[in-house]
Amino acid sequence: MLGLCGVLVTTAADYTSPALALPGAVPPPDTAADQGVPWHYGDPHGEQRRLADGTASVDQSHLAVLAVTGGDRLSWLHSLLSAQLEDVDPGSSATALALDPHGHVEHEIHLVDDGSTSWLILEPGSAPDLLSYLDRMRFMLDVEVRDATAERAAIWRPVSERDPSYPTWLVPAEYDGRGSTPSGVDRGGGADKYVADRPALLPGSQVLVPREQLLAELGDDRAGSWALEALRTAAAVPRQGQETDHRTIPHEVGWIGPAVHLAKGCYRGQETIARVHNMGKPPRRLVLLHLDGSEGLLPAHGDPVTLDGRVVGWVGSAARHYELGPIATAVVKRSVPPEAVLIVGGSIAASQELVVLP
Image (cartoon, rainbow, N blue to C red):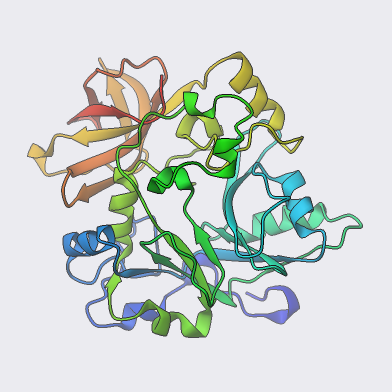
């Protein structure tokens, strides 16, 4: 389809990365979260190990990208999104959420500003909806928004370091053990009441390269999306569309701190953020499940999680981790006892590891 200024933009549904033509590249099954990019290159567990060791790169060129320019871009985005963005320095990055008026998560946004442009990295196919919303909110400000998916491609690198040549988003500090993000330091009161110690760390960065440079920047040490998803699942790092549904509020999956600043002013959905934080607890919580591997099965996204025959939640992501074996994230009712053994997908027993505190 044609984007702004007549640029040809490939939709998420029909995108095929040139990396799928590389030796050993295996396309994803229809059930995989990441379509159009290599699922693995023949050694999924070895690829996990190389990512865990801080080597290898992952093709994420299927992700959508928006570009926001103009002198008012950061203050404007600050007024619309959940993160503290007014004081983002050139080269710095942040994680933010676009919420609906009731505080439900609509978009997870990985933002990096290069001094003249704020680049927004989104889930595949998300650009048109967020672009439409942002375009309606420009009013008379010095801001322009365009779909830049045809211009830039994302590459995951398993180190929390900026690339000196390209805009680079860093994972929130809470995910990789560096400490706390600015949102997590200036919490406005107790963001740490939501998340237990993380099950594992996930150091990493997303580098936005010119799309024509994708293969060159991927290099020869490559890993597939299967390996990255296994490490993300083990660290219980939430991802829009996997650990979220239409009712998700940020408190339930541990986004208070990494993506939500509790002390900033009004933005869409902020009333729900404040009310739940100050007056109660979220109705659901994210957990990491250690699955019984005797049946050799992995649950699918959305499969029910039950306790004593009652549905108490659903599966987010599932993976075979190179050290932990079969694991999954799930979103369950807050009232579920943390010590309870759950049944996943009708037959798989699972123990819980706390992520979001009950």
